[in-house]
Length: 113
Length: 115
Image (cartoon, rainbow over the protein chains, first blue to last red):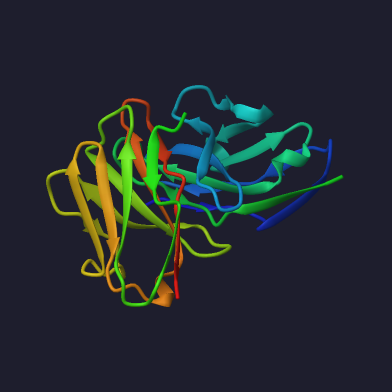
Protein backbone atom coordinates (compact mmCIF):
# COMPACT_ATOMS: atom_id res chain seq x y z
CA UNK A 1 0.00 0.00 0.00
CA UNK A 2 1.05 3.57 -0.58
CA UNK A 3 0.75 6.62 1.60
CA UNK A 4 1.81 10.24 1.51
CA UNK A 5 2.62 12.61 4.33
CA UNK A 6 2.76 16.32 3.72
CA UNK A 7 4.42 18.17 6.57
CA UNK A 8 2.74 21.44 7.30
CA UNK A 9 -0.89 22.05 6.45
CA UNK A 10 -0.14 25.72 5.91
CA UNK A 11 3.01 27.42 4.69
CA UNK A 12 3.38 31.16 4.44
CA UNK A 13 6.20 32.86 2.53
CA UNK A 14 6.99 36.37 1.42
CA UNK A 15 6.82 37.27 -2.23
CA UNK A 16 10.18 36.52 -3.80
CA UNK A 17 11.19 34.06 -1.10
CA UNK A 18 11.96 30.39 -1.53
CA UNK A 19 9.02 28.01 -1.51
CA UNK A 20 9.56 24.58 0.06
CA UNK A 21 6.66 22.17 0.44
CA UNK A 22 7.52 18.85 2.00
CA UNK A 23 6.30 15.43 0.94
CA UNK A 24 7.31 12.01 2.19
CA UNK A 25 5.92 8.83 0.72
CA UNK A 26 5.64 5.18 1.54
CA UNK A 27 5.42 2.57 -1.16
CA UNK A 28 6.11 -1.14 -1.35
CA UNK A 29 7.02 -0.86 -5.03
CA UNK A 30 8.85 1.81 -7.03
CA UNK A 31 6.52 4.79 -6.92
CA UNK A 32 5.27 7.33 -9.35
CA UNK A 33 5.07 10.69 -7.61
CA UNK A 34 3.12 13.79 -8.48
CA UNK A 35 2.51 17.31 -7.32
CA UNK A 36 -0.80 18.95 -8.11
CA UNK A 37 -2.03 22.48 -7.46
CA UNK A 38 -5.63 23.36 -6.73
CA UNK A 39 -7.07 26.86 -6.82
CA UNK A 40 -10.31 27.55 -4.92
CA UNK A 41 -13.31 25.70 -6.31
CA UNK A 42 -11.30 24.27 -9.17
CA UNK A 43 -9.95 20.91 -10.17
CA UNK A 44 -6.37 19.75 -9.99
CA UNK A 45 -3.59 20.90 -12.24
CA UNK A 46 -0.49 18.77 -12.63
CA UNK A 47 2.68 20.63 -11.68
CA UNK A 48 5.15 17.84 -12.24
CA UNK A 49 5.66 14.11 -12.02
CA UNK A 50 8.38 11.60 -11.27
CA UNK A 51 8.19 8.34 -13.17
CA UNK A 52 11.59 6.72 -12.57
CA UNK A 53 13.57 8.85 -14.98
CA UNK A 54 15.60 11.85 -13.77
CA UNK A 55 15.43 12.38 -10.03
CA UNK A 56 15.25 16.16 -10.38
CA UNK A 57 11.99 16.97 -12.06
CA UNK A 58 11.13 20.37 -13.47
CA UNK A 59 7.53 21.37 -13.77
CA UNK A 60 5.40 24.28 -14.78
CA UNK A 61 5.46 27.77 -13.28
CA UNK A 62 9.05 27.44 -12.11
CA UNK A 63 8.44 24.57 -9.70
CA UNK A 64 10.71 21.59 -9.35
CA UNK A 65 10.98 18.55 -7.10
CA UNK A 66 13.71 16.08 -6.29
CA UNK A 67 13.09 12.40 -5.74
CA UNK A 68 15.27 11.10 -2.91
CA UNK A 69 14.82 7.39 -2.45
CA UNK A 70 17.02 7.21 0.64
CA UNK A 71 14.83 9.79 2.35
CA UNK A 72 11.56 8.66 0.73
CA UNK A 73 10.95 12.29 -0.08
CA UNK A 74 9.70 14.33 -2.99
CA UNK A 75 9.79 17.93 -1.79
CA UNK A 76 8.50 20.71 -4.02
CA UNK A 77 10.50 23.92 -4.40
CA UNK A 78 10.40 27.20 -6.22
CA UNK A 79 13.20 29.77 -5.94
CA UNK A 80 10.99 32.85 -5.85
CA UNK A 81 7.35 32.91 -4.81
CA UNK A 82 4.78 34.90 -6.73
CA UNK A 83 1.44 36.06 -5.42
CA UNK A 84 -0.23 33.83 -8.01
CA UNK A 85 1.33 30.76 -6.38
CA UNK A 86 -1.08 31.03 -3.45
CA UNK A 87 -3.12 27.82 -3.63
CA UNK A 88 -3.48 24.33 -2.19
CA UNK A 89 -0.78 21.86 -3.15
CA UNK A 90 -1.17 18.10 -3.08
CA UNK A 91 1.50 15.46 -3.26
CA UNK A 92 0.34 12.09 -4.58
CA UNK A 93 1.72 8.62 -5.18
CA UNK A 94 0.71 5.74 -7.39
CA UNK A 95 2.21 2.57 -8.79
CA UNK A 96 1.49 3.68 -12.35
CA UNK A 97 -0.75 2.38 -15.05
CA UNK A 98 -4.45 2.26 -14.33
CA UNK A 99 -4.10 2.69 -10.59
CA UNK A 100 -5.57 5.49 -8.50
CA UNK A 101 -3.57 8.19 -6.81
CA UNK A 102 -3.16 8.35 -3.08
CA UNK A 103 -3.06 11.94 -1.96
CA UNK A 104 -1.49 13.70 0.94
CA UNK A 105 -3.63 15.99 3.05
CA UNK A 106 -2.47 19.04 1.18
CA UNK A 107 -0.51 22.16 2.05
CA UNK A 108 -2.01 25.58 1.69
CA UNK A 109 0.55 28.07 0.45
CA UNK A 110 0.06 31.73 1.28
CA UNK A 111 2.24 34.40 -0.31
CA UNK A 112 2.62 37.67 1.53
CA UNK A 113 3.32 40.87 -0.35
CA UNK B 1 -6.89 22.46 -23.19
CA UNK B 2 -8.76 20.14 -20.88
CA UNK B 3 -8.46 16.47 -21.70
CA UNK B 4 -11.08 15.43 -19.17
CA UNK B 5 -14.41 17.22 -19.14
CA UNK B 6 -16.65 17.06 -16.09
CA UNK B 7 -20.19 18.37 -15.92
CA UNK B 8 -21.92 20.04 -14.25
CA UNK B 9 -19.48 22.23 -12.37
CA UNK B 10 -22.00 23.09 -9.70
CA UNK B 11 -25.28 21.59 -8.57
CA UNK B 12 -27.68 22.74 -5.90
CA UNK B 13 -30.52 20.33 -5.22
CA UNK B 14 -33.13 19.47 -2.66
CA UNK B 15 -32.71 16.61 -0.25
CA UNK B 16 -34.02 13.37 -1.71
CA UNK B 17 -33.30 14.14 -5.35
CA UNK B 18 -30.76 12.38 -7.53
CA UNK B 19 -27.87 14.07 -9.26
CA UNK B 20 -25.87 12.79 -12.21
CA UNK B 21 -22.29 13.88 -12.86
CA UNK B 22 -20.56 13.14 -16.15
CA UNK B 23 -16.89 12.63 -16.78
CA UNK B 24 -15.57 12.43 -20.33
CA UNK B 25 -12.09 11.81 -21.66
CA UNK B 26 -11.74 14.04 -24.69
CA UNK B 27 -8.73 12.85 -26.65
CA UNK B 28 -7.99 9.38 -25.37
CA UNK B 29 -9.83 6.24 -24.42
CA UNK B 30 -10.12 5.46 -20.75
CA UNK B 31 -11.02 1.92 -19.78
CA UNK B 32 -10.70 3.05 -16.19
CA UNK B 33 -11.76 6.24 -14.49
CA UNK B 34 -11.63 7.22 -10.86
CA UNK B 35 -14.07 9.17 -8.72
CA UNK B 36 -12.81 11.13 -5.76
CA UNK B 37 -14.59 13.15 -3.10
CA UNK B 38 -13.14 16.15 -1.34
CA UNK B 39 -14.70 17.64 1.76
CA UNK B 40 -13.91 21.26 2.63
CA UNK B 41 -10.29 21.84 3.56
CA UNK B 42 -9.52 18.15 3.21
CA UNK B 43 -7.72 15.97 0.74
CA UNK B 44 -9.14 13.91 -2.09
CA UNK B 45 -10.36 10.49 -1.13
CA UNK B 46 -10.94 7.77 -3.68
CA UNK B 47 -14.56 6.69 -3.77
CA UNK B 48 -14.62 4.17 -6.57
CA UNK B 49 -12.97 2.87 -9.70
CA UNK B 50 -15.10 2.92 -12.80
CA UNK B 51 -14.42 0.13 -15.28
CA UNK B 52 -15.68 0.19 -18.84
CA UNK B 53 -17.98 -2.72 -19.49
CA UNK B 54 -17.95 -4.07 -15.96
CA UNK B 55 -19.02 -3.16 -12.46
CA UNK B 56 -17.36 -0.41 -10.56
CA UNK B 57 -15.26 -1.22 -7.54
CA UNK B 58 -15.96 0.81 -4.42
CA UNK B 59 -13.71 1.79 -1.57
CA UNK B 60 -14.54 0.67 1.91
CA UNK B 61 -17.30 2.74 3.43
CA UNK B 62 -18.71 4.00 0.13
CA UNK B 63 -22.28 2.86 -0.48
CA UNK B 64 -22.55 1.40 -3.97
CA UNK B 65 -26.34 1.73 -3.99
CA UNK B 66 -26.09 5.40 -3.19
CA UNK B 67 -23.30 6.29 -5.59
CA UNK B 68 -24.17 4.60 -8.85
CA UNK B 69 -21.42 4.46 -11.42
CA UNK B 70 -21.88 3.66 -15.08
CA UNK B 71 -19.00 3.41 -17.53
CA UNK B 72 -20.89 2.76 -20.72
CA UNK B 73 -18.21 3.74 -23.21
CA UNK B 74 -14.47 4.19 -23.42
CA UNK B 75 -14.83 7.94 -22.98
CA UNK B 76 -17.69 8.40 -20.53
CA UNK B 77 -18.27 7.57 -16.90
CA UNK B 78 -21.18 8.85 -14.85
CA UNK B 79 -21.67 9.11 -11.12
CA UNK B 80 -25.22 9.36 -9.85
CA UNK B 81 -25.78 10.42 -6.28
CA UNK B 82 -29.15 8.88 -5.46
CA UNK B 83 -31.49 10.36 -2.88
CA UNK B 84 -28.97 13.01 -1.97
CA UNK B 85 -28.79 14.31 1.59
CA UNK B 86 -26.99 17.32 3.04
CA UNK B 87 -24.12 15.12 4.22
CA UNK B 88 -23.45 14.26 0.57
CA UNK B 89 -22.57 17.88 -0.10
CA UNK B 90 -19.00 17.83 -1.29
CA UNK B 91 -16.66 18.41 -4.20
CA UNK B 92 -16.61 15.43 -6.54
CA UNK B 93 -13.72 15.02 -8.98
CA UNK B 94 -13.14 12.42 -11.63
CA UNK B 95 -9.90 11.42 -13.24
CA UNK B 96 -8.86 9.33 -16.19
CA UNK B 97 -5.42 7.77 -16.41
CA UNK B 98 -3.47 7.96 -19.61
CA UNK B 99 -1.64 4.72 -19.19
CA UNK B 100 1.09 5.32 -21.72
CA UNK B 101 1.85 8.73 -20.25
CA UNK B 102 1.57 7.55 -16.65
CA UNK B 103 -0.48 10.63 -15.91
CA UNK B 104 -3.95 11.05 -14.53
CA UNK B 105 -6.00 13.86 -15.96
CA UNK B 106 -8.55 15.40 -13.67
CA UNK B 107 -11.88 16.96 -14.41
CA UNK B 108 -12.62 20.43 -13.09
CA UNK B 109 -14.82 18.99 -10.36
CA UNK B 110 -18.47 19.26 -9.37
CA UNK B 111 -19.55 21.18 -6.31
CA UNK B 112 -22.67 19.49 -4.95
CA UNK B 113 -24.77 21.32 -2.42
CA UNK B 114 -27.79 19.49 -1.02
CA UNK B 115 -30.29 21.66 0.79
